[in-house]
Amino acid sequence: MPDLRRIGVYTSGGDAPGMNACLRAVVRTALQNDLDVIGIRRGYAGMIEGDFVEMDARSVSNIVQKGGTILKSARSMAFMTPEGRERAARHLHNAGIDALVGIGGDGTFTGAAILHHEHGVAVVGCPGTIDNDLYGTDETIGYDTALNTALDAVDKIRDTADAHDRLFLVEVMGRDAGFIALNTAIGGGAELVIIPETEADVDEMKDQILGMMAGQTRSSIVVVAEGKTTGGVVQLEQALREDPAFGDVDLRVTILGHTQRGGNPTARDRVLASRLGAAAVEALLGGQTNVMVGVEGGRLATTPMSEVRSRKKPPDYELLKLVQLLV
Ligand code: F6P
Image (tube, rainbow, N blue to C red):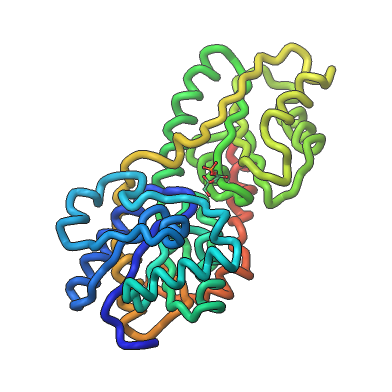
């Protein structure tokens, strides 16, 4: 890597609470080390268009507590083409950017790895996604906030479930991972949780719910992780309603959706984001590239991007058993 004088920073993929705190830490750590910092707006889309802005210490004032990302984010189709990446690399070169810090999830790191491979651009990744689905870090930036948002919603839904003796299916986010679901279920005292990692199909999920309800009339909450493999909560609702064994159960479905992506980051996310933002710059200063910074067992760690992308972080199956045990 050439002498480090100017770095670029961007947020990409789904926004996550704490991205701003991470950005602030990147900018201020870099400035403390006499590096120039260029903010790249709208992730890879902005990189392709050269949508760059010079960052100073004041440009990240008063953002540590804010959700979203002041640099904005995007999911760029153009960056998936070699021409798009070529344009991005040219803009980076013309702006004198020696290395990048990318804040985002799986897709962000895939883009970073290809950019590194094709154009030799040095990148360090900060894990920013509510899904917590990245190998190489115990938690991702935004996960704790999303989890608490989901938990707060479940607590509120519990009041209505209880008052009306209803069954609620509450769908939470997580893409193909069940971290939010599992921990919301434990924290919210759910009667059942369904996560994508168990690969249950709609009929199996329906049977689990019917089994749980057998012989009981009280209210129940089932936390269902969204999961591209399972077809989603709407399909599950339909299957339940069509099954004669379901009878006249009073069922409601709540999809928490993007409420989980917004809001002020929790203290835990702000601290994690600040640590990781600073660590990313320090990793670059130490000559590391194509790695992701994370926290493992409470300590800062770096993991090669290839490993982050090829390995899957498993859910804690003990928690799955705990949900069943505590009903
Ligand atoms: O990766 C974060 C996430 O919120 C996932 O949980 C969800 O599946 C997806 O992004 C939704 O993406 P979008 O906001 O682009 O619809």
